[in-house]
Image (cartoon, rainbow, N blue to C red):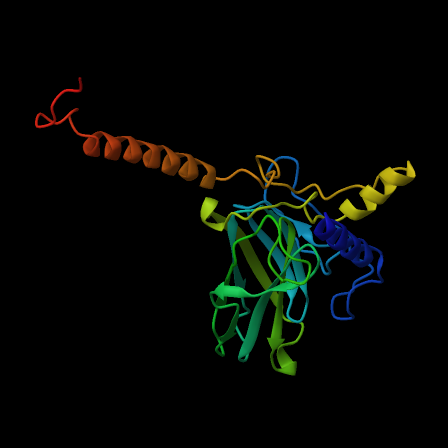
Length: 269
């Protein structure tokens, strides 16, 4: 499909482009992922490329300094409405400071929040600040020009956006958790992506064509795998509606056809 080729090309360009913006770059950082024993990560990445992978339902933690950019990534599938929550524990002594969480999709497009306080200011001496962002429902397919959230990897960036110079570099700790609500057929659309938008998918597709070694994909995916995009409970309601319509038709015919030949009509010769 044309949309698949366009999105794949965009993801490939982003994956092969130079590093992220100066505020996001950190050449010394290394990528991290959830531990094999299922424990939540205790560190965060410092750029898109080094974002720490977390599963939905895990509460990740990290220690950092005020002014650092902290990154996590998580998978979201079609029909899910992710909710990202973050809590920043501040030092005992500090001035007023404003914290913010931003969420980006697999193409690194910033996704707007339906509701929730994604930016909040902690008053002087406050012990913590809590942030939340409820995203729009992830769609199985979208037009190339649209900014709809699509299945794949999502990135969470947490940082302070306003603080006094005296507070820069003070130690803080952060907690991040992602949960999703399954919206189901109410958000179903006709069509689906050929592949979810995860790091390495476009490079892997090109490698298959060149018969060379495939790129390593992100290790994150939903527990039950990526959905195909065509099945939803909308099919069940469509079948039930069709059955009810057929029964209504049969009942209407039974009520209107009468009991047979009227008694006032003489029999035919």
